[in-house]
Length: 359
Image (cartoon, rainbow, N blue to C red; front, side, top):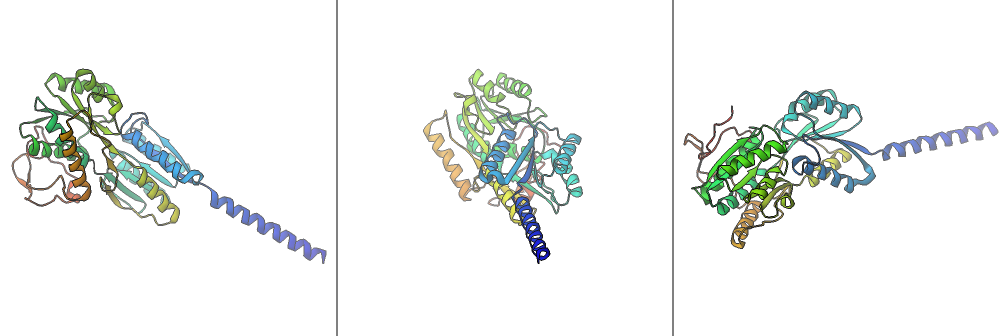
């Protein structure tokens, strides 16, 4: 009898131990990794991705454990960092720059149980999705504002790398200039870097010396905004709200808000419903925001806000024909909207851009 009781007690203790272990295992946080091309303090692209990470942590609390690696060059270093994050037990990894695309897919082939999300590319795999923000929507509004606010009719654009995202946004600025101020000329300087405050400031100063009085940027530091503030011209912020860096220069900022997407993707992994997708969110999804219009007449701000409202509702789409390329050939017929699958990989300039299209 005693032996039977002992066996029962032993079994009960064992069962309780297994149950406790199961509870502990179920309570283990989901480990999520992030890879940034710039420092989290760039006040631009990487800063906004990290704000999304922090929002994710706040939303899920101790259900998640996040980590990030900043200032990771696009290339071999990226593959090493991504691989190390997968080895470290991260089950969801966000790689947040165009040049991470192929390294992400390479690591994904090895770590098939890990879910990967790559920003701004166009390739997917069974365990790797892709996500973009429609920055061109905000950039069109910036082109409108620049067209209205310039006195010299010279608009500057500080560009990073000739990838589809940057080409697309240069084009949408030019389309806005053509519509609202055909006399305006867009001057482009390539700095071949996402984050280099020195180069960005130098580019801004060169433009200002050439008569540019409104500067847009597709780089990640507030250096151009600060140069504009010092030199008494206007500027548009990139990725985050850069108004504090140029109280008198700032016209608007095109802000990326990744919080909702990061929370959604994390929930899908937790629920077991995650699937790879080509996601592209903009103003309608609140992934692209323009916090405020500043240093401009009320009439300009009102019309700019109407553009935002029309883009958000779908009433207006920036890439609506007729659109010609630099050779004068019709690429989008009158009244038609350029398909998103063509916009994703765009590698040509619209008519009016005074620059050589990249190979």
